[in-house]
Image 1: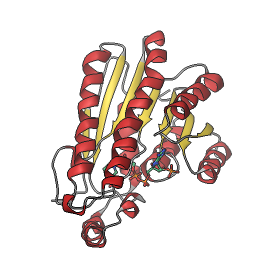
Image 2 (image 1 turned 90 degrees about the horizontal axis):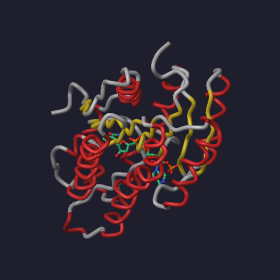
Image 3 (image 1 turned 180 degrees about the horizontal axis):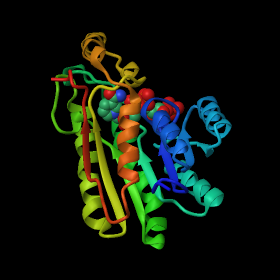
Length: 244
Ligand code: NDP
């Protein structure tokens, strides 16, 4: 039996891309999934597909910018399954643009979802994980959380912040709480559709011709979770081989 079997895993942003691929992988490994995102039909069909294949999952419509909704997601996990073993803080968006365009609304959205959403997730599960004396928080940062690209200043700032949080969780989590920072390169998902600047969208779409499948990241998340309790996979960077 793998270390995944029976684990209760909350995934934010489960309605597409990396979150959805991770849900499928973990369900096959016997995890009990709690799926959060805003688009209910997507969550419903993902839940149905998992259950049809013999897996276990519930969903809860969740906007991660609303702390009460994130708390409700954690409560749903505890009500259904009695504990929370893993939180995958995955919800995020990437409306890249040059700073001079002053797309301040998009900057705020990124701060709200990519940073505050992660913080609300942490706040919603930390007390339960402390009570259990065990837990695992997996944060989705990015290669853009290690280097800054043209038009990525604000997105990179949010992903550097995520990386800092992962390190803080590692240090303060001690022996009880494992912390994994996942930094994908270009992965084929809906993420690039949030770019409103046409020039940036064109550049990014050209870069994303080399993008790898979301399952590559799902496999990395599974790897981190399935390690024995005394092994903490702190940082994984997964790029397409073609990515410079
Ligand atoms: P997708 O756009 O496919 O998925 C993003 C998910 O986030 C969706 O399920 C969306 O669901 C959810 N989401 C967005 N806003 C909110 C919100 N306010 N509340 C709750 N959920 C929200 O992109 P990816 O799967 O690629 O992205 C997943 C993570 O991976 C992100 O954090 C991203 O930054 C990171 N990443 C992705 C890379 C890539 O190349 N794809 C590279 C590096 C990092 P809904 O709209 O239903 O709410």
